[in-house]
Figure 1 (cartoon, rainbow, N blue to C red):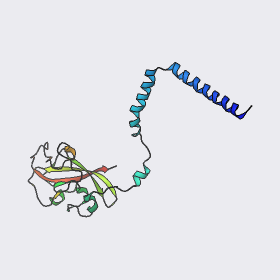
Figure 2 (tube, rainbow, N blue to C red; figure 1 turned 90 degrees about the vertical axis):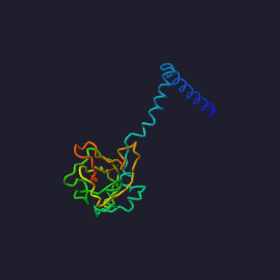
Figure 3 (tube, rainbow, N blue to C red; figure 1 turned 120 degrees about the horizontal axis):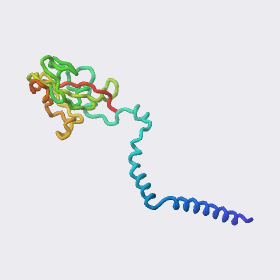
Figure 4 (cartoon, helix red, strand yellow; figure 1 turned 90 degrees about the horizontal axis):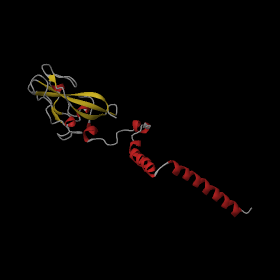
Length: 188
């Protein structure tokens, strides 16, 4: 047998095998079924990106874009506006009014709601979710007033807007006194 005849027989064998497989598929499915399966695959393709994957490189990486506040933040003085937890605070610091970073001064009550921010801690190199809560019930102490706007959002996104006085619903006076900055957890 000549080499060209062998190639022709192999070619025809591959052709016959392909034809047999395609005829079997065509015999057991309709056009509508094929279109349904293709449509399902197209619709599911974006969800494939949401599957969990190993992010070892991402976990060890430093923050890519440092905010202006994050580049000058410090972790030593809780009474200074550049303290790392205060990246999105707007108001008087409770640390200078007789309270703490996460506790209200005596005679005031914490608001039941808060706004949030994500702040970079230069001491350990991690970012944390911070809940800013207003302390209400007494007149403003006005000792140290800060206006930091990292991640501040417009009023139609109230959970990240630091311009709202959050004293409604405290059961006491809605008079603003100061703001706290409690760490909720690590930001991912």
